[in-house]
Image (cartoon, rainbow, N blue to C red):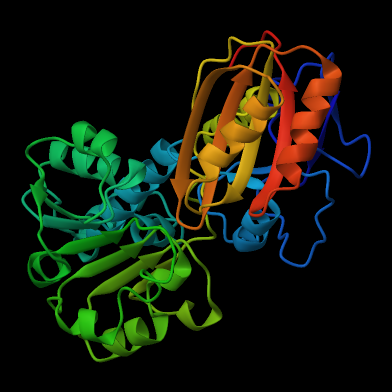
Length: 394
């Protein structure tokens, strides 16, 4: 029986994936897996029982990923599950940047009298805008969200340029061939009327847009941030706006200093706030966590490599270890020394750590226990599990 602990409100459609015969949810304080949204775990002492943490969102800044990795805890996220929700908000923000609809709506609410229609017609010119068609949009980050924004903006008639030196093969296939690819960031900064951010937050992207980058933009440029607040230096943005070096800024990340500025639109982190996105993220997080607990397969992890192998043997042994030379050979030798045949085996490394799946046909519990004991004695081994095959859908 697997134990699952949840933080925040997780959509029931996701939790329903944990069948009651094999799972208990929030029944004790020694869970095998954790599923959460925004709960911060940095100050939490994770029980030794925890095998994996799944966040029903894309970013994992609220999870101590490095500490988890060192303890052999796999961290999952849900890339793409909320992509459509964020994309729609970006498109809406682009439209609001060129058409002052909200100002017009609020102004109209202040009118009164039987000739409201005439008053509106007489003063509507003050809310005239421009069109997106023909304008140049730069997209920094062509992941799931950036790719969708690129395709839909092109369909609106915009000239779209994307920049992402790390674009994946899957994403590349999903982007329209009519989207221009920039070779460097400067190409986007110099020529675009609108620039929208869709990169993850890490050491390389922190303050990716700062004073130097803002000076490379046209003073008529509108900047949008629906990635992470820290990818943009907001002090530099305020300075650029106050000096008329930037036409406007739209962000989904609230800061007091950004409020009450006519050229800045601040949203209360609405990117993934749709009923559909909540359900999609919960389903994906639960599916990834369930798959890992029952089969050891890793997909969509931020700290360990993707490792998949058909589970056709009675037992599977999973090993998390330091990524050091000949570790795979040592693992195989220790198992062979106990006269146990290996049916199948796969290993993948990611930076300083590696993950191995070993399928065996051995059913003798004493021999299996001996394997676990031997492997745990090896230098560089972080965590060893044994999984009995069971039927399930993922």
